[in-house]
Length: 291
Image 1: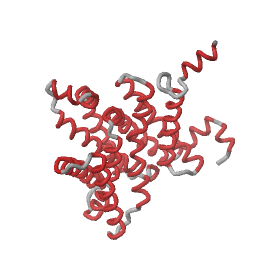
Image 2: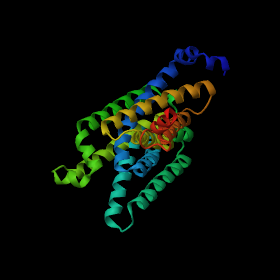
Image 3: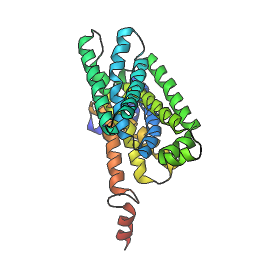
Image 4: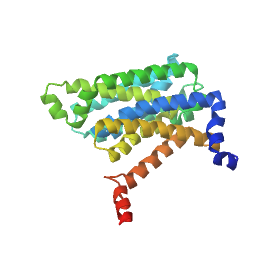
């Protein structure tokens, strides 16, 4: 990369936009980031970070099986994602093993099954693209699937916004006031599985976990209001996706990894300087400087 191009902000921004694949990657990554950021607020409030990890890794064998049967990757990934959630719930009900242990067992088992299937089924599946995504080379059919699934997830979250918020914040109170918490439980898990599917093309199975966790965790440090938390989560996810793609273009870096690193730096900034909950509490630093 020409260092002077980096210093010239106009060139830095506009040159990548002359490429069709970059415009497509920016659109897709921003869309996926918005969906994952929206859902991330609920997962953070509910404390489901590990569940997001489990579902994201469990979709891998579904991708391979779908390829072998000639089906869309998204269908196989969704079925195995929901299947992993159902299996976790079944083992939890039928054994005395704690939920976090069950989640660890199920997602590592599914993930290992996916790796074995990739090695045994003759196909053109690129394991690297499954694990780390390939937003710069996404096909038109995948774009259509991602847009449809993204809109579906956003619609579900908007329709059940208040009920889901109460369920995540206080499930006992939600049950007391007559809300069907079991329905909301599986609805949220379904949205999680769908989000893992849309993130599969953008950042891959491994890094989609960060897309589902980091934006919500960042927003949680910056506000106590859930609506503000959702907005901050979505905006930080989109911003980090755009920055990550530009950095990967100019410095020839892995796109998915660049996006997640951008998210991580934003979280670290919030962790250090958030007005109320930051390590250094930015407001105190300013007031101390004025004194």
